[in-house]
Amino acid sequence: MTIREPQQERSRATHQRLLETTIECLAQHGWAGTTVGVVAQRAGVSRGAIQHHFPTREDLITSALEFIFDQRMAEVRAAAADLPEGAERVEAVVIRLVDYFTGVLFKAALQVWTAAAADPALKERVVPLELRFGRTVHTIATELLGADDSDPDTHRLVQATLDMARGLGLADVLTDDSRRRSQIVATWAQHLSTALTRVRAPVEAP
Amino acid sequence: MTIREPQQERSRATHQRLLETTIECLAQHGWAGTTVGVVAQRAGVSRGAIQHHFPTREDLITSALEFIFDQRMAEVRAAAADLPEGAERVEAVVIRLVDYFTGVLFKAALQVWTAAAADPALKERVVPLELRFGRTVHTIATELLGADDSDPDTHRLVQATLDMARGLGLADVLTDDSRRRSQIVATWAQHLSTALTRVRAPVEAP
Figure 1 (cartoon, rainbow over the protein chains, first blue to last red):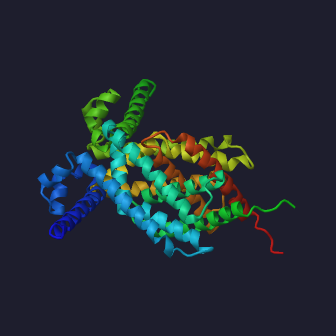
Figure 2: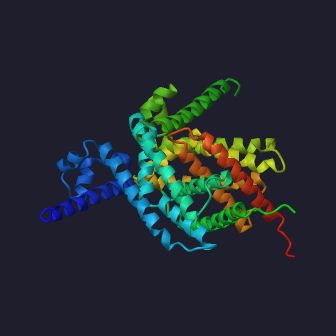
Figure 3: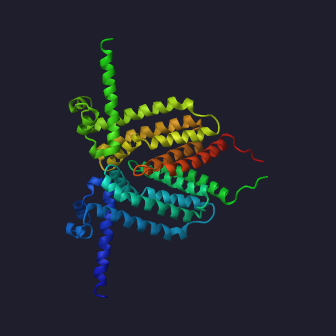
């Protein structure tokens, strides 16, 4: 076991680098530009080694999206302990959610979803992924906000927040939208915070 | 003049059909699948006739986006008279905005913006378009809502509404998201309405 450990570590590091490179390549060069050959060269891995683990380009790309998504969500959950309590918490959570939708993983996924809109075979593969990603992000957002998902209004406000974050992600694809975005995030967080507080402690009828 | 009219009408109709077909083709077949040849065949226009007016594929596609966008916005403005007054108005406006972001023009633009993210020459052409479209939609949304754009909170709430609508548009690209969407639109419209009313008539300090 001790003798094999370094090799296992090496192959784990190679696996991580390969899938990260695939995501970066998608965000930068798009679906059509992300071939096994391009990824192999950028990651410093042989084409044969990639094809041994991922027989097709679609396998490589969907595996990269799933692997990096799960890793990213585990990080977000692990960092929950650092979130402030009280009034500042909602804004801190909205900022993290928007960070996710403006990051390289979202830009990569956007390229794949968009390609899938014009490619029925790819669409069949990515629709379950999109569904799983959406549900997971909603669950995490609810947890971080400490929101009551069984309340219909709360459920929809969290969904609306994620839709807004997705829209902000899209607005950041061609140009750096960070200045406008930070103002919108602050305004949204303030309204969300007020709305969630109102749900938690409804005003008594006089 | 009278003699030439029918030909002018014919060529206007052909122009309209050609640009509409380009938008439909983008939404259905994506950027790579929208070649002058494919559009020519679907629109029943010769490739030479298209190239006479639009020397390159990029010219055809960006002209189609601009022409159909301007037409769509003129329709939205013209239909403003049909909007209800009072409490129902905000929801009616949000529904129209979200309809725009879930329509075929948005799906076509998404294909072009996404392709531009991986193509610097195309990006240079579409960034000014994206900016103009964004500003125009914001101006129209403000007009329809009867909102005071000089109030910073109102300005940002309208922007956030458009970002949410854009996110809802993206969520509708691979699957029919209309059921979830209608609930989110209703919830958000209610919050937006309350927030805009609060801005218009601020509560007096006791």
